[in-house]
Length: 438
Image 1: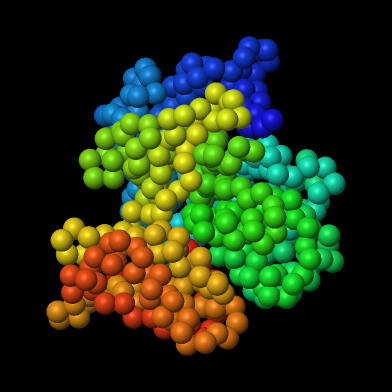
Image 2: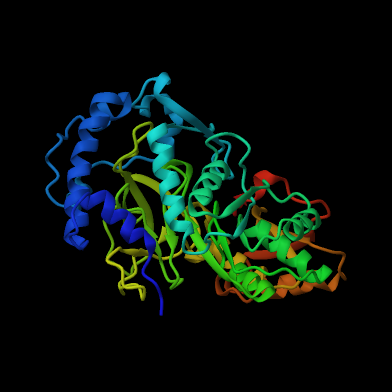
């Protein structure tokens, strides 16, 4: 029998406080409306940006959750122009400043401010979210930055200690063999890390025939191709969970439960929407669109209707775990990773990931589109975990051609594919899945 997500108990405690009342969607939405009105008043008073951005709106005007559609959107361009204008607290109240380069762009780095209260709320979320896959006595290898106080790995380490589990701060995977050795020495049975990094770890584990006993893995920091999940499950015979979050959500946002269906959202702290990326209108449950979120409790740098650029949907069906919390599907790539060719043909990085990662030995690849006078070219630079024969490049070409949009463009004569081996490992900054236009 599948256990109900532990996030429901956590959220019920934050919403219903000291009552024994059973949590319902009505409770959640009434709470979100109250918090949204409070947040509007808070940011208009404390944030230079939102004082102007929400000048036409007053706290108390939101009567239902659906009324959020009347508020204007915010996106990374607003934020990157002047992150300090978003801040709602003084320097003395800031516990941590997270500076992160926007994925795959040359935009100015993001600077998000967290108060101690903000970070405590994230630790809380991590504790309850991780209880899906770790428990007292487990040894968890944290393959994320964690040496700096307040970093994602550090917060996760604190959350695990509250569960009674032992977190081991390791950092990013630079040498898979060294990481595997650490897993053996530390008796690791749970992993937390970035999808492509854990893929390289799985490839190395299979190649060296190391016998490691894992019970669960949490993938985070980037969207998760299903092809990588399949490889991890088959390599270690364990359960693989998906976490969705970003710097702007306070590092934590949504996580899968034991049902491994959609991700349950941090509904007491964040209000999520799915909108049409072109019109901005709310789409129906079950329809894909752009993920938008609004901070309900953040103090340092709150965001109102922040467009993430990520593609997902709300699932229409109730989660098999029986929770009243909504479920958001796993992320299906990014809007900026869709390249439009002639005849409305679209190349999508997510589809490339799903196809190419299935090939034996591939641990990473770069994709870019370059334009010639009469044709466009899809360039694929592929990295393998060991030396392979040259016909592997032909397999990459053949696999790319199984993607209908690419096959159609090639047959119409306005796209060709160039595949090359990447001899050196990709730099850490390339871990985010992006497709470039050159």
